Image (tube, rainbow, N blue to C red; front, side, top):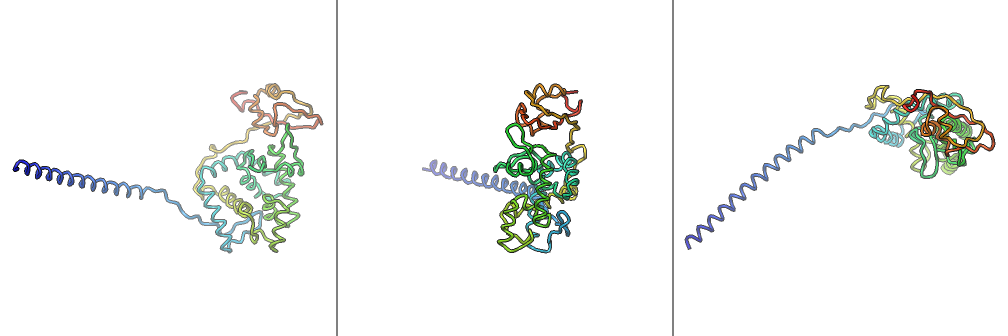
Length: 313
């Protein structure tokens, strides 16, 4: 009986000691976790509100920044586009490559320089295809492209030609400016269509883009352009650090005129010491491996200067 009692008491003692040790370890872990959490809390990246410029304008037309609803909308675009850093930096890199092509065409047509940022928000300065089927740097739908002078077929799609599509965009924008009387509404019409904007202006009995209640995409459209314009014009102000050597460069080319059919662009490429891939990189508007050209139209094919690529050095 005594031995049994000793064993019971001894067992209780062991259990109590174990409980004390477990509790001590648990407390130590809790304290360590609290220390780790404190360290994490102090190392969290700080995110700051962005000060919106006092004066914002598009094509010389002022945004009414004293309107609180307008300010909320432009603030959203500044936040989204500033803190999506990887995308903004890519836009800055591509702009250095493509703006020198776009800017003189806008100027020759009397279209404000600010419209180069419309191309930025439309395509990110890439030859992309939208879910609705709009294509190219300026995102033309096929009927609109053809209406403004671009050729679209299985062989050739000039929506992918930066120079020609920029010219077509100028024609569209000048037409919209003539219809609406200002460039801000012309920009909105580029997104929603001239008839779509005109219908909403008549329905809501207003004459200003900032007074219109529009769908989500068109309602954000000009605000996105303006935020991108400000960020790309003053990148250091918004935290972007880079050297000019980090930016993409437009490859120097010369033009070859073609007014006949081309049976095989692989063989055609080799005549100019380049390969098929390089030919298509510089002429993405050539949509097939050959060119029918039954109409004997004159096409201008861009060829990179010798020594630009490893292939032709």
